[in-house]
Image 1: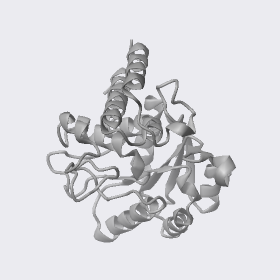
Image 2: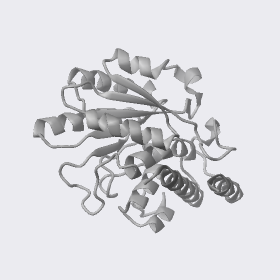
Image 3: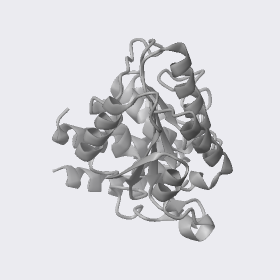
Length: 277
């Protein structure tokens, strides 16, 4: 896809995120909207090597959504990528659905690992990268973490392990929207400059506008092309806006885990439509 098509795809995914969360009456719109452009770049910008017709194909790239509460963003992305019908998105969080509040790899094609307990995703991603090297299998491992999630100690245990093992095919993208459920990350438990922190743990660090899909595609494609087992892993600090695309949700911690009312959905969809014109 070219840049205009990627922006259009991200808009479609945002519409689906908001619609399915409203239909469910619960969910996490803020952090789903902030990582939408990152997922769009990965899945539709030619970065990830994946095959919806054969989700377990040997040699594929792996994607781990460490911030599992942003499942609506992943579900919408997977549906648009062809893993299952877009119509199924309406079943989010309903009794008997495959699309639970956090992604389940036993139920949903395209979900590599069940996630939800914050802090564990980077450990899983590092383990996958180490396993690929041991087996000689091709492919890179990408993961998206929340910046609030980086307050978890397990993140830094995994960061230390990955750097020590020189897991150069591991690329961690930090959704740096600076908000978590209780407020600003710098007020709750200040992680400082996350780029400097990952660098101190022995990682290579890159920074990007997390809503510039063209810049995301260029950077992530280049990092993947350079990925070798003997290099340090890479942390991409993606500056984002919580609730991106909806004026009354942007930079508001209150929209971390609250579903829009029908009238709020109507306003949000109108804003997305106007922005797309």
